[in-house]
View (cartoon, one colour):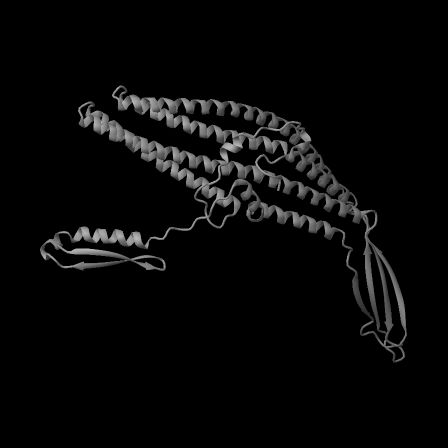
Length: 444
């Protein structure tokens, strides 16, 4: 047999294992070489394994503030707002002047040996009359105001969505913890059942039932782990995190579920209604732009004319305007008015929807509160029942089948409490969105 000495040495990226084999009995070494290679492989993999770095999950309030600078959705809305603001500034710019150069009488016959060529240099400035410029500026400012309303709506929607996603990630994590605890209890029940079977106090069937319970608990652990990973990945993507979150360290679900709805709401506070109103005003302003589009622009030209037969120059003054003979933009005006009518109807629809959404969300919040209270009471009762059932089982007074049923009831009660908390957070987020406020943090 060979003796193996394993001495770990410090290494920059892990642990380097120094393995030395000392020959003692050559005949026994061959029979155990396979096991030796397996052990060495496990040691090498364990020494060279480097855990991946994961981002620490901040609290919800901190994450909400950080997301303002990293979340792709908010960055998109911020860019749209800057673009609308730039369009409003651009609308106030004057039309650029036009420089024209005209050469006349090129190649014309000379008169008395003198060239008849004339060169004219002129600058033309076009002026908008009839309030066209002011209407255009007002329309762009209205569009900018609508962009502000959309950006505010997007930030509010994001904040409440982040709360739901954060709470969902924590709920999935808690479900995984419940599944892990259920697996531990199932393994304890299996060991207890085996002990009772070995002592002749239970039939072999009880061991098979306990093993089946362990297998089901293991499957539940895998499913809960996958759900938790998916929820954390969604949270990471939503806030634009460069590294994936792996664990929620700051409790939020239970705190958020205790939030109470506010009073004094009116339909005018609904952000969707405010956004629809701003859009209506922008479309109405565009109607005035279309109504004035047919008005001619006046062009004033000032220039100088140079004669080919003389060193003298002459000044030129011109006036130009389009003639609205064939196009008075009647169809464009009609289209703009119809779009304004449609925008007005959207405002009315948004008003009715805001009232209905608020009533529905308020009812959901009240119902979720009662559901959470009942779930918490059921969880306490199920925990007491399992504690008493386990004591009775260890004393031989409770059967394994009854104990397994009580244990499943306890896990289901805990899962129901988690789902009730998550449902309440969702209901509060929906109500907050309907009321135009952020429920779980300061307004960004």
